[in-house]
Image (cartoon, rainbow over all chains, first blue to last red; front, side, top):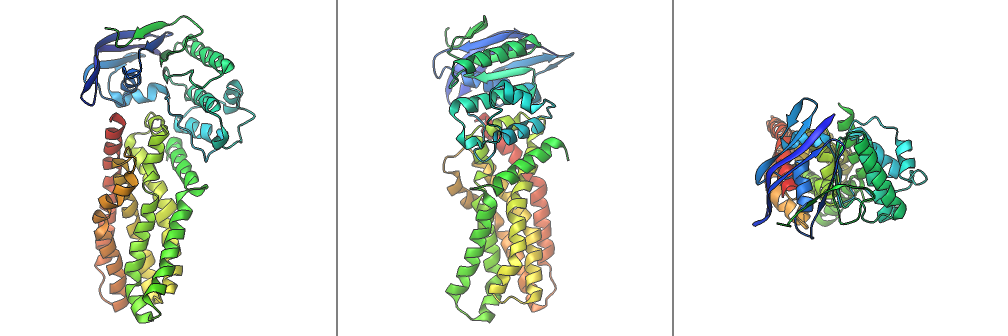
Length: 204
Length: 222
């Protein structure tokens, strides 16, 4: 059970430019943190930093889970459910193959048909991913997120390319995830369908 | 073999086998090159048998190289590599799975095709056996060294162009020992080249996952 995600005096440098520094926040189990800010302010970099892809220039990211605190970047990986702005979808694979691959890779035990029904892709499950629209790819990304069954969701523009139903679905999935005690950190400009804490980057 | 490891291996094999995949491309390239060389050199069978090992070895290395740039770049470009990096597998295991998939989809089929292509060169039975054996032992080194180059250049837009410049010099021992083993077998000489080839190959396969994982780490942070 995840307890909290903490950032301490976090600083991020890309190239020779400092994006942010001295960033402190704590997100507790069941909370959503929405990261806002102008383009290029470092929202995606912050997510990559939390996921452990980027080492922080200064400061630390800690995840408290069960009785232990994990601060090493690569140890954080298996806790993270990732929805990036790139879809991670291979045009040569079918929808079902794509989802099954990630389920096996992540050692998930979820029943896939139920998840595909939930995101509205059951009818397309044998369809090659090359024929999916941008919105359908996003839905497949959401399905992958649910299947991964990870406690910490890091979402980059979760509502982009989705239609009205899709946005509602994404909101529902996030709320359900928090209801189970998970944590969501999302970079987004869109209004969420529910109350969420906000972190504004570059406001200082 | 864990389910996660197997699923990554199977996915890469499946991608290699599907349309636009690397497996068929490498085989077709190898076969076409092996057909063109005798046409260019002429019908002197003694001469052809002499150059067969060298030509087929160079052909196999170039054919395996064709698909190398996509080994990591494809997954990097579409964001799959991020998702794979977050799996329970370590990046070293990921590198091992991708190396295996590359060898199984290029090195192994090239080895199996080589006796047929050796016919075009009039290579004697002894030489053909040694050619196939040296390819079997040596092509893992091609995939292993190639994977290092592929992971190093994965974020470069035209990485595929730099890749051969980077790794072909490193593969000279493979071509020298591989073709050397066949020449020695044809001349009926004692064959040290095969042992050296096996040594180089073992070292490359053992080291490659660690170096490749370090390169992937570097690129994910970049």
